[in-house]
Image (cartoon, rainbow, N blue to C red):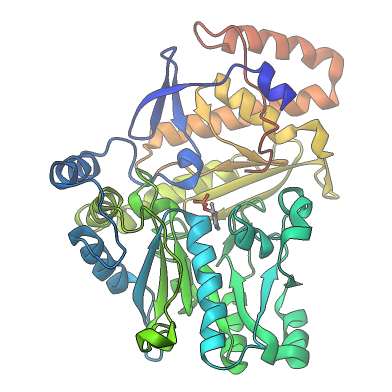
Amino acid sequence: MREWMQEEPVVIASGEGALLRDTCGNEYIDANSSIWTNLHGHRHPKITRAIKEQLDRIAHSSFLGLSNVPAIELAEKLVSIAPRSSSRTLSRVFYSDDGSTAMEAAIKMAFQHWRHKKQPRRRKFVAFAGSYHGDTLGAVSVGGIDLFHATFKPLLFETVRVNEIAPLKRIFARQGREIAAVCIEPLAQGAAGMRLWRRGLLAELRELCDRHETLLIADEVLTGFGRTGTMFACEQEKVVPDLMALAKGLTGGYLPLAATLATEEIFNVFLGDYSEFKTFFHGHSYTGNQLGCAAALANLCIFEEEHTLQNLKSQISNLKSGLESCRTLPHVGEIRHIGMIGAVELFADAGRKKPFPLHQKMGFKVCDEMRKRGVLTRAIGNTTVMMPPYCVTDAQMGKIFHALRESIRIVCGKTTARGRSKFIWRATLRRGRPAKRETRRSASLQEPFK
Ligand SMILES: *Cc1c(COP(=O)(O)O)cnc(C)c1O
């Protein structure tokens, strides 16, 4: 926090497409889609218009015992595009405000569902090492990143932690009837540094959960809405979860809104007479917010009208070749790519995969250099994340990777060949400093991994 206090923050004033502009007039490419939320770019006319038109009707009314038009239309739309199979459909939608609350709702639903089914022993949740499901306490309980989560351990419920299918099989064999649900970020773990699961793991997990009659909760908060190349990540392994959390890209990155999708079977378990009090006692003041729902409807409309998923293929291959262009740089030890998610991890010894100590802030330094070159993104430890909005142009993609390559060379050059590269570092600092900015922001200690 002390270091963060000393930095001058970049204050964003406006944006358009994949670009952000700060109060000093500097332009940046939004290379992490405003923390993974933005899809079609800033100020997309269709989303802007939808929000304005909704504002002329009403901004918000309570969802408690009431409903509203855009929330109904959005729920229908979400159900129609959600993953489905012959044996399972996600036919029910529960609204909340952000990814964390979408996961809280999923966790509480799974738990209460087993109580209603008279299987109260099923109360344990399985979580994967390195997982991130949000910052509220339930979501933190199923989180697996020590830096964020370890402090709060005394406040959390107990979870069973695994890192692969094999240990999970052993756990199911021993205590299968105590497992309420398994939580997973399908295909890629975002906050862990865009770590990709091996292909097939998700489908094996679904099969395992079915065999032991346990619920599968898919956290598609990051992966949903085309990020991995398909509308939902689960589709790529033909998996239909029992509960699915959606947020980030749901409104195209315009307003906070989230949804937890559930199967009809789970929904039915909550049916009962008033006196049974079987309802799901969970709700937020802004549940089903009309402005958010209108933005989300416009977002999904763009997918159809502008053939977003088909057109994304060229941007995905651009991203891939951009990432490949970094492979031969010094200290680049790992490149991870799926859909419109890219990550480059630096190592002290790339060959032996010996990591840089975190306090060297290598990822931060790379992002800081990139910022001076007009590209904004955030690092996760030593991993720099590249995931621009889908509307990114070829030229912008080129600029992102040009900035990344230069930044890696400068930052790594500085650590390896001190004397000579110090000069280059200074020179670049002077040349690269944006107009009217005297101070520079290197790193925020506030959230070093997010
Ligand atoms: C960001 C994220 C969350 C939390 O969403 P918030 O809207 O920040 O609360 C949950 N799960 C995953 C996979 C995420 O990437």
